[in-house]
Length: 128
Image 1 (tube, rainbow, N blue to C red):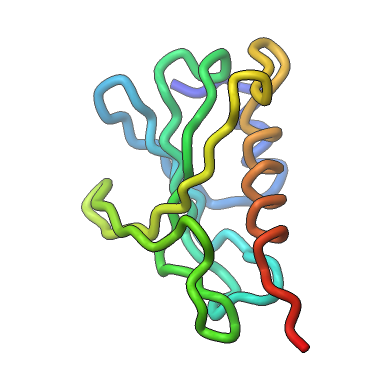
Image 2 (tube, rainbow, N blue to C red):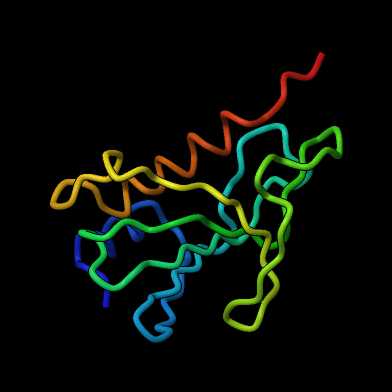
């Protein structure tokens, strides 16, 4: 279902996770994912919907539950929709990799989680 190197990566980080197949997709939930400073919550469950063919095919978007807003209560850009997956309502973070950003045979779960982290950090407004 998920390559051994990705399972090892999750385990090495000590993340509690769950894999749930859904048709051609694999829903990966990382429980209690730590968010960077600047959000109303410090942890949220992170949902990544891995496409069939992953890691040669890139994931698209990610989801949080509970939702994360900025500490000033403003809405992060591209995170204003809620969607239902695996019996829960998730805040969708609309983030997309361009064709040239994902390198089949090189990129994997580690690089996608780095992409998520970079996005979460980059959008936090500077608080004066």
